[in-house]
Image (tube, rainbow, N blue to C red; front, top):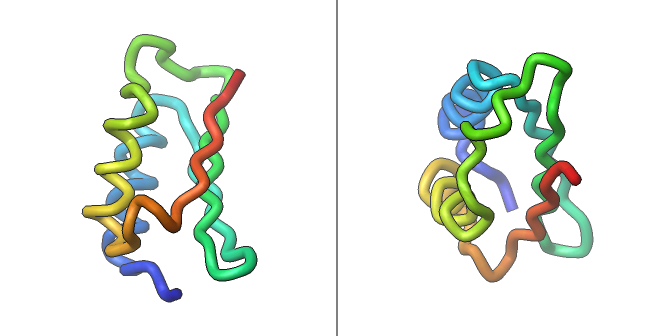
Length: 73
């Protein structure tokens, strides 16, 4: 599974502008997407998980059913 690199860069840039970080890892044929908040994170800016799953799918070209999404607590 090779995510679209341009999509990765665009998604990371969008998240970073709101104070979040995106880490991606492939594990057992699945994409693990972990979003973490920086000290400058905008709490109201992070979309709900179902919306983020669609955004990741579209940006990276990875089907939602292969994505494990982790959000900040």
